[in-house]
Every structure is written in structure tokens, then in C-alpha cells.
Length: 222
Length: 121
Image 1: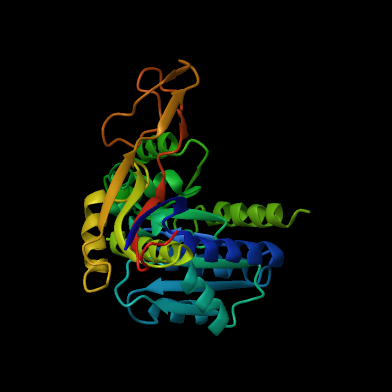
Image 2: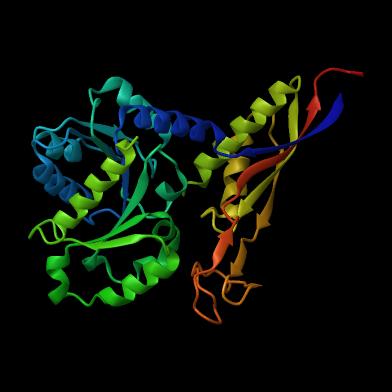
């Protein structure tokens, strides 16, 4: 018996991050833009995706990976619009991992795609830590959740390149200080972008789609 | 609670490291967790204990070095501490966005183990 101490400096999530790295290379090769949508349950991720798919119909090839604890409901909603979608069922896990994205791509016909959306499991905490090979994270915050969410869950709002305030059509009916949220998100994430959207009325959806289109163009620029 | 999943990943990384060095039983593992890593050290240790239980590595200890982020205000040209538990990236004195380095560590830094063989040179 001999004691050995090995000094290493290895990312704790190295195995998962290797998969994320390989995915990022693959998406770079195929020129596919990959946004990773993160929010609490019920903030309107799937509804925003439905509005986006309608807006981009005939312009871009879109596919979607949905993460949920149970049911195919979200993937069914996307498929109903004629867009390929694969549902990852986590069976209780609170986030998606790069290996599950790998798995989804190998079992489902999602590629080639111009934009591959990943809709993470509804959770503002755990998905923050996991790299899925995405181009950027998008944090959604619905006005009905309250304007204190960026204060209470700062990690995701500091890491998401884009914050989308959703359900903006309900702003007149709920106490939600949009300017305070704007200021706080800007201080958490000085380089980030904040959009205000209503998937129901279409407010801000053009701006969101323009952002995606311009990011796709940037990615494909030689 | 994503700490459980992270504990499993740390365990895999440690087992890989031990295997690369001839195999053996884990005794102690040191990791670095940054203040901005969104990982709770106590929950991570709790998860670790559950992960190594009923394995040959049962009882191996996980120790956590908690790392502060290095933050500077470019306007004041000084290091600034953000207040305890705050994620605000602005200078508490002048409001300029801080330059933040590190603080997002989630690294395995040292793996101690007992090798199986005797008197290895």
C-alpha cells in the first residue's frame, strides 16, 4: 500500500464539457446557430419558439430540442408547426447535459438546420452551469413572475447574452418595473442585450428574430 | 439541486485520474469552487458522500477551496470587493462596470489515493 497525491487542474465537468466542445465544432462546421433557452417553468419559452418558427417559415430550416421532466407536450407543439423537434425526457433531472444533446442528434432527424433551438428544462438555477455547445444562452423572464427575479437568480442573468422579458402585453396589469429590471440586468451583464417581447401580440418578436438572423449571419461570415 | 450531478462528474474525473496513475482507492479530493460558479459547497460535499457510499472509495473526503473572484474597477484603478453574496458587477464607489476575472472555478485540483500494489519503486 502506498499513498499518492496527484495534482491536477481539471474542470470538474470536463467530460461533459468535452461533449459540448465537440458539439460546438460540429455546429460551427454546419453553420448552425444554437441558442440555449433558459427560464423558470411557464415563462413562455415554447410560445416564443412557436412565434419564432412562424416568423421564420420558408426562410430558415429550424429544429428544436426540448427538455422536460415528463411528456412530449412541448415537442408536439413544435411538430404541429411542421418543424422537427425531439423531446429529451430527463425523468427528474433539472437541466440538460451536452451528452443528451449528442443523444438527441443521433436519434432524431434534426440536422441540417440553420437554427437549432435548445429549450432547457424550466429552471433558473441548474441549467446555468451546463455548456451544451450553444452559441449563447437566452434567459427569459415573464412579467407575471415579478421584477425581482434577476435579483434572486443573478447567475443566469449574468451569463445569458440575451435576456428576453416575455408576456409584455400583460405589463399594464401587473406590477413590474421594467426600467429597474433593465438597469439590474445591465449591471449584472454589461455586454448583454435585453428585449421586451409579447409572443401573443407579436410585440418585439421582429427584434428577436432580427437578432437571431444577424447572429446567424455573423456565424457564417468567413 | 445540480450539485449531485456535479458530484458524480467529479467522482468520474477522480477515478479517471487514479486509473491513469496505476489504480487505487481514493482517500481525499480537493476541488476549487468559485464564488460565481453557482455551486453550493455544502450540498456538493453532501452529494459526494452519497456518490462514494457503497463504492470501494467510501469514506474518501472532499474538501472545497472556495475562490473569490478578482475584481477591479478600471475607473478607480483599484481592486474592489463586491458585497457579500452580491452578483452586481458595478463598482460600489463609482458605478463603473467592474472587470471580473475568475470566480467561476469548478476544478478538481488534487487527488490523493492509496495504490493497490506494495513497495512500488
